[in-house]
Structures are given as structure tokens and as C-alpha cells.
Length: 147
Image 1: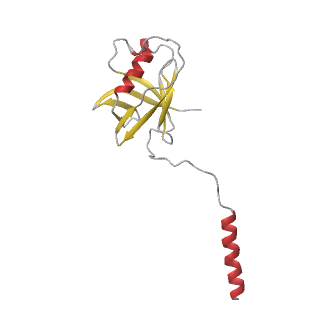
Image 2: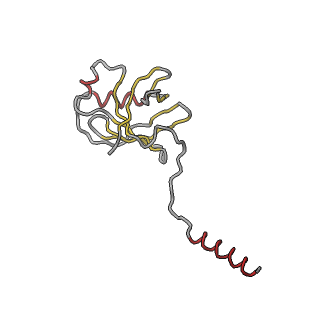
């Protein structure tokens, strides 16, 4: 009887070990609502030109990736990427990386310059992402469902 019990234990232990999943899954540093969503700009403060005039064809977009601390998106005309640092509700962005060089008006430069000034963020009750300077919202984004 002891031999049968020992044999069953060995079979179970061997079979559990042989079905081990070797797939690597990235570990998220923060399971917050920022990540892996496309956010589209719907408001920017501090410009002398109306929002629709700044971005007549395409509105800027941003996507946060927590596995490599990068944001990627479109500034209304050209693509961009930048590093970011986040601690609590404090956030800062590095210089935007290489992008194409099409000129599409002043909106893109306004957007990228404003990103450099941001130091806080919040997500409000309506699910809107606010990028702020201290307690003042400077840019507001809505979450876009991706196909």
C-alpha cells in the first residue's frame, strides 16, 4: 500500500512539473487606468488659437506603456514617443523622441511644449485623463475604444 501511495505522489508531482507554463508575462508596475489605452486630446489650455483651429484634421493621442515607461502617440500630425516618470499622481515627460517632420500648423508644437510642463495627472469621475500643472488642468483626454 505504501508503494502505491508513493507511486501516486510521484506521478502527480511529475505531471504537475511537466505542464509548467514557460510563457513570460510582463509584470505591470501599476495596474492603474492610464495604461494600454488610447487617449485622445479634447482640450488644451493656454493657446491663443481655438482648439479646432489647432487640430483641424486629427487630434493628438497618447498611450501609456508601463512595461517600458514610454508614451507613444500622434501629436496631431507627426508621431512621437517619450519617456515618463510617475510616482503617485506626479508625472513628468522626457523630451519627445524622433518623429516625422511634416508641418501641420501650430497645434503640434503647442501640444509637445505643454507636455514638457506637466507635473501631475488625475482621472476624473467621467473617466477623463487630466494632465496638469500643479492643480490646474492643462490638457484633458478622453479614452478611445480601439478596434
